[in-house]
Image (cartoon, rainbow, N blue to C red; front, side, top):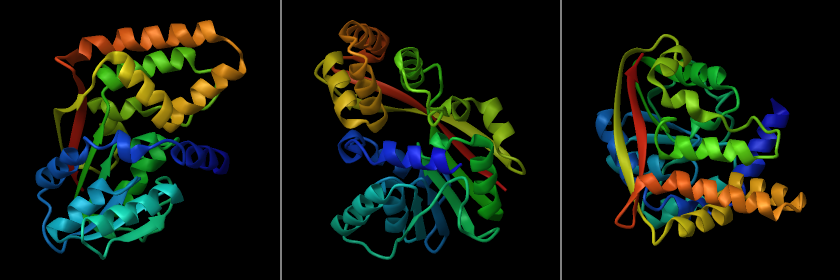
Length: 263
């Protein structure tokens, strides 16, 4: 687990996720509405990243803890909290596979494209359920394999020379798999929504991704070490070809899955 933990921490320490995620705040707001978040609810945001969902929950009046494996992202989250003009979020460094909390500690567990990247999916699921109070609510977002991010992940896997297994989030985008990954959860509800991202061209999105997304930065660096420019160009072309069906009028549609459940 330690090797995977260090690898995940390294990947998420790279890139510019504040820029990459600038169109994601509505997702956080949607989660808090669907889970019927109330003032004074105790909330845990798992793999909180730079804090979008934790900050959104705090603005509702909830008592919020945000946990992430990456110190760089937690530092950024604290800055975002200050800009938002709020305080009181408890930011903690920690692993989604080994949450440092007692059983049944929180009324609500949230995760926005976060815990889905934990290497051990079964353990991450069990941990979220463990720290959720009986009768508590769970809400998270994920990427279905049949939509844009899932299809792009298939292309990345084809060209990725790294042996990493740190990123395999597809199961969290499949309702039947989710039910298997969440023991002791009931009343599971699913719906899909879309993030609309303005882009000037598919190649603009490719360039943004390979310079700002930590995992893609590592993949491109590994390919460059192989001195295989033809492979990189083939990668770019296949990535763009896969991207194009999801673009209309300079808007990229990133479809995602929302899961709401109770314990």
